[in-house]
Amino acid sequence: MKKLYSVLASAVLVAASFGATALTANAKPKDANKSAAAARVRTPLNIAVLVQDDLVSRVGSELNVTRDFIRSLPAGSRVMVAYITSGTLQVRQPFTTDFDAAARALRVPVGSSAGAPYNPYVEVRDAIRKFPTDGPNKNAVLLISDGLDTSRGFDASSTIYSIDLDRAVREAKSHNVAVYSFYAPTAGLTSESLRAVNYGQSALNRISDETGGRAFFQGTSFVTFDSYFERLAKTLNERNGAY
Image 1 (cartoon, rainbow, N blue to C red):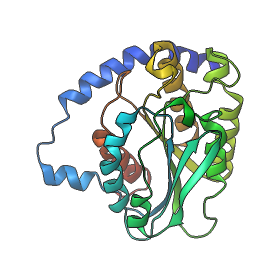
Image 2 (cartoon, rainbow, N blue to C red):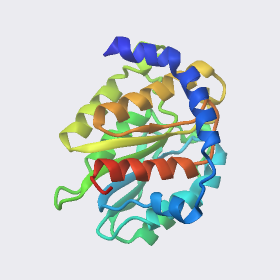
Image 3 (cartoon, rainbow, N blue to C red):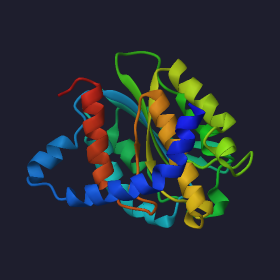
């Protein structure tokens, strides 16, 4: 498994560039109504939206599409909104069926190192422990992060195979939570170093793949979330048997 992710780490930049080209070619839907329908989740779920607080300020421009996604969830879903900030999980909205309240809980990230977490995966574990234990809904985390954990070093072994990432994977599996992730750079290393981007995206790929979710990113720079949410909804529908 480590060999697989090491290969992924060295190849992700090329693959991401190819993905960006392919996605751009298909970015414009032929039918706006069909696209809007595809972007809707069809089966109720419990979902925790986690935003890393030191992400670049441009992520703030994606709040409206994130709010639209929350408000479009099917009745019976439950939503939590929280921020990974300064080594803590700041829960702005506990799990609720009030989608409008959850959407309003979103705020613009701090966008500086002042909001940097110890590492994102400690708080992912904290969030997973807050999931409801009752009801038929499947559980999912939407992690909006650069995926980078440098708390124990800055190399493939200590980032892609981070101890806390391993623990988060185990926690997610024990609570039947699938982690879906959107990559965005922070005001720190992933805005300055392609190697940091490479490590972070590979780590997001790993936590998503190993928990039954999926990672979404497009090249090595920041892009809008519109296409991510459409692909996320499609993936959730496919895996929940809603097609």
